[in-house]
Length: 134
Image (cartoon, rainbow, N blue to C red; front, side, top):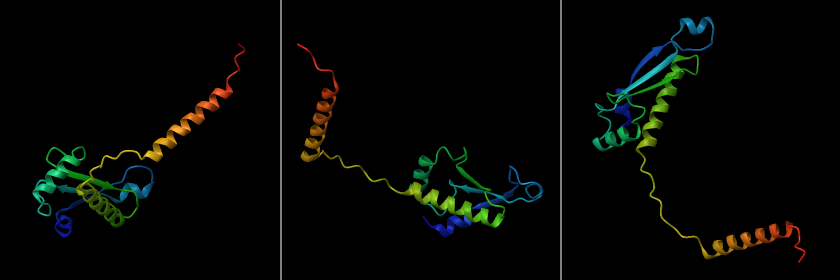
């Protein structure tokens, strides 16, 4: 993964933010929309593209384009920085290989501790019952 090439391939579009904000929000396009063409990217290897297509399947369009938006701040520049940061973390997180779980067995001490606790709780609940009058 080459971050410099990825950043050059990003396309930005400024759009009007939704929600409250009065006069400011009605005349300023501060929301930033980032689009990234995963299929035609030169910054990713073929293996990385396949991996990202699988892991980001729900976030990609039919043409394998990733669209992210940021409109939390009133500054277009700050929103652009936020959406770039979100994009980079999304790509990095989804390219990490997950650690394979190693099967282990409980230790003898933990098993005996569990059984002792179960026995103690059983006795405690037996003592709560009314005594039988035989």
